Length: 353
Image (cartoon, rainbow, N blue to C red):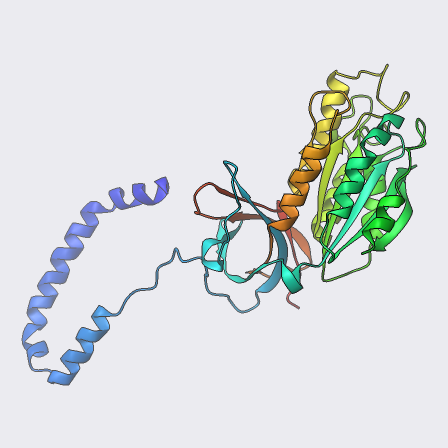
């Protein structure tokens, strides 16, 4: 905005001379215009009064070769209260510096409420995680009938599924078991990527809730640095390409997995939690933790996830076609007061060929 204003100030003198020149031309042409037919003058007058389209309208025009991009957006109130209902005119999408036209903005409710939710538990977690199972079971049972739920455990870079996707929520809740403890996991992000690669395509939302420490000695090195972890980046790429949203609840791992005796409460744990933050932020989810220890009660976290799932929209916008499918930075914004739109940081833009 500042650049535009500066440009107007710079061209002030040129604008004044241009106005004087235009006035002189207009006076010279006045006799010819007076001789014009009355109906022509009326037509000219109506043309001059026609409204000019505003460039700031949310729906910019689609161009030839544009391709549709689909994303899930979560609407969240900034200061508590209820999330407002938004119309397509309330939403703007920007791909780099260009505004893209919104072609569809649908609340994911009723017959569009289809959701596949996978609960992914780190098998390297401490056994006290079992104290949280009643809240996890309650969370499962409270989900809408249209939500299919699966349950699995991260182990050795893969996922051991104990319950495939089912709308029988009681069956899914019964599948919960205690983690097997230390030595069961090498990289939570390898397991996350493994789950997404084996997940069948569907028109339903695909979302994941992880319970893990986020510690990855295989990919993060000695410092567990998430910003240099190739397995974390691969998992994020898979999530953004497939439209997965990832939530995580931090829960410490057992002895030998980055928990007690290995820097708990220090830089290593902080970086582990940062890794969970990175994954959730880039995929449009949320990471939950409080301090460095095991949470006393995860029920508030689970309730927040439930609220987010209730206030999601399916967004479709038209993006510039690329030579090959790739991830492109995307920002979804609204001017509705006290409202945030949460989505993945990048959208998967396919080729128009």
